[in-house]
Amino acid sequence: MTETTLTLHRILKAPRALVWRCWTDPELIPRFFIPKPHQVSVVKMEVRPGGAFTTLFNVDGNEFPNDGSFLAVEPETRLVFTDMMVANWQPVDNPGLGFTAELILADHPDGTDYTAVARHRTTESAEAHEKMGFSEGWGTVATQLEELAQQLQREGAGV
Image 1 (tube, one colour):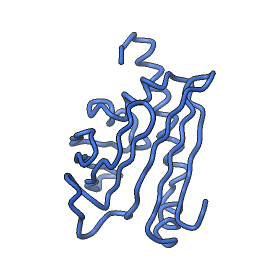
Image 2 (cartoon, rainbow, N blue to C red; image 1 turned 90 degrees about the vertical axis):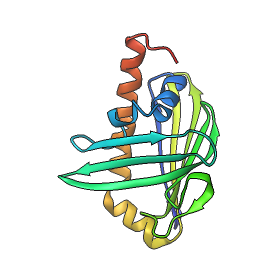
Image 3 (cartoon, helix red, strand yellow; image 1 turned 60 degrees about the vertical axis):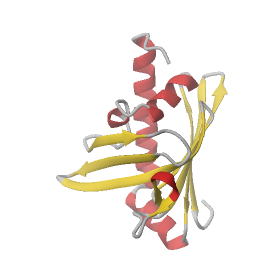
């Protein structure tokens, strides 16, 4: 971790195209995007630069809205999003943690080389995110993502 950046790297034993599909299909997001038994609902996504995303996390009976915007979309390679803006580059008054996430995917002999980077505005925000469980939580999400992509592959779900 640099002062403001948190990183998670994994090799996912699933095809890159299916890992990408999981991250960009609003019907699949609830199946992996938050550590179980917590839930995600109200998933709306416009996967394009400047496109909006909206999710609602349910954690122990408490609801947490999570609105943001996609900044970069490079199919099957890179997805960048932030909670500091909503659709069409509009800044938000009070961002959640105030960070930008970058997902980097590459082919690997065992499946997908997967890197998730969370860039924060301040050291304090990065430290708060880590204390909230970034490494453990995003690690669990990566495992759930891998399992979902493997399930889709077994079912012959095309990309």
